[in-house]
Image (tube, rainbow over all chains, first blue to last red; front, side, top):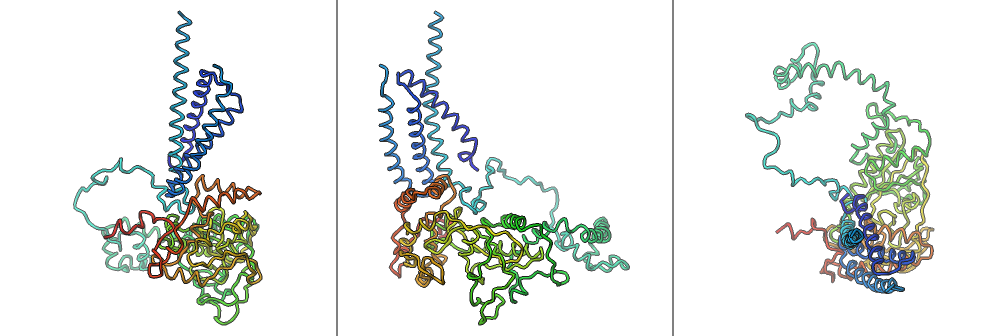
Length: 97
Length: 484
């Protein structure tokens, strides 16, 4: 069992996630972007998919499957980018100026 | 004034939290990347081969490396005499040669000299022989029952060579006492459920990655025997009455060489483990007084192995005729132990392989010899299954360099994947999706994400190929990096 596969690693990842949520909440408030629950849910789903993309690429590299890493990186990366852009536009809806 | 201070303080705290959030997002994403890479190469993901990947040698010795070993030379050195100074060797000789009447004079001169020099050793060796040994023997008879299982387990661990199978099963399969040669009485067992649990645990302890138990279907027993199994060669096998159950054990081949087939992998790494496990389980069952016979690779069988794995609930037979298990895919080399020890058989499983194999066909597309059918199942000996052209298969794997064999169908099967989050998730999604959509998506991904070379390239150059492998060999099999 190595560090990046250990419970301690996921504990630290959990702390990072909390900090990201708190930082994002404050940043959204400062920018006047309302964040109802459905926006948080959509954002959470996008983060999960983005995380999957990173982990898919690196796991494939670790497994010595560069083709899977390349094709997966391109396909899932593009999906992440496009949906990320769409989500960003959605988050900015009803922004208080 | 106060308001300004407070507002300044709030502002800086908010800024700090925002910066922390941004930094955490970067660090968290990077951590996820490292996790993924580690998950891809983690020895823990090499199911059944974890310890052969160095998973347990994790201490950072380089930090503690020193120029001199931590023992010290303090005087003139000498080498030990194995005949006298190794207690296990000396004890045997001593017990054979000692006679009370003549004392050490009955011993060989070498031992006499040793005991003259070391009277304290003689005193202790005599105490061992005269006091401890007889009492131990008496107590062994009295209290042995308590240790039957641990004794059987220990002896099974030592059973690493095949038992003699030179007589018919009615003789060879039954246990006899090592001391008297008389048949062993079977121990009284509490229940088949408990015995099954025990046999499974012991089989894992003895090295088996997967274990299953089936009631033996006589249809799987060969009609005529192989040589060297104690049967008369030209007489049909009459299925012995004591072949009631089949215990299935097995081990996987090393994962990285497996993916580098046909030239770099070998069946023998798993064959040898599978054989030893079978010998050990046979020994364990026999020491409990029941009949047992191992059927093991390469060619010491009285029966067909794949359908017994299916009966024992270990997996399902795929298009390539190999059994696909949820844990190892097709990367398992099984052995069978037929026995009469009362057991509770496992139930067969259906985790969607039949539907999957209908459409996947990756093994058939990648099979260099064309031995695996692209067509539907046929009736073979009264059972519906995919036909394998064994002559084509045999011709290809006999033509190869490296370690002979092929194993491409095992390597390319989508189920034959190491145990990390990615492949575990894919398996769990597929087996739990009743619509079959995920199956199609994942098969498509498998074909495009994990492509192999053109099957013709697997052939040797003289037969129009390039000695290609499905994947590059692991670093420790790259001859060019180590040998001039």
